[in-house]
Amino acid sequence: MRDRYGLDGTGITIGILSDSFATAKTFDASNNLDTYATNIADGYLPCNVNVLKDYAKPDTTDEGRALLQIVHAVAPGANLAFHTSLSNFKLRTSRQRRETIKSIVLPFGEYLTAFESKFLRIVNSAGLLYNSNFGCKQK
Image (cartoon, rainbow, N blue to C red):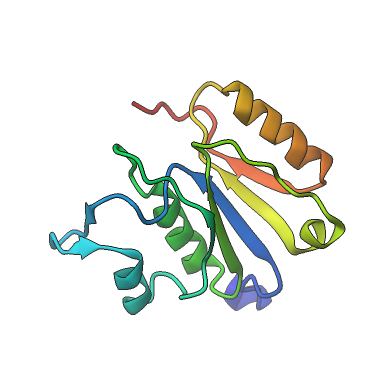
């Protein structure tokens, strides 16, 4: 898309909802500590990811950061945002937010919780595009 059509995500914000962004102790393939700072240094993420709320309890995986790495590789010009999906929050659907945020990636499991169902209704009523991995079985 970038080469053929000159599209790199410039002018849009892509938000990720997942368990955590920078709270898990994770390691890269060479067994080096993998952090947001090392991701910036290695060019996997920009330094301006808007982390609205993270989740700092045991058993998080920083899946949100991994998903944003993929988004950044595909659309390096996009603004990136993250909010944990493990705590309740209110999606503000102001005119400005509807014009700015164009896509939200939702890594929900096979079955929707009541919170996830409510969130999808809010996102849909705001006219936002959302993508999900529904049907993926998680442990």
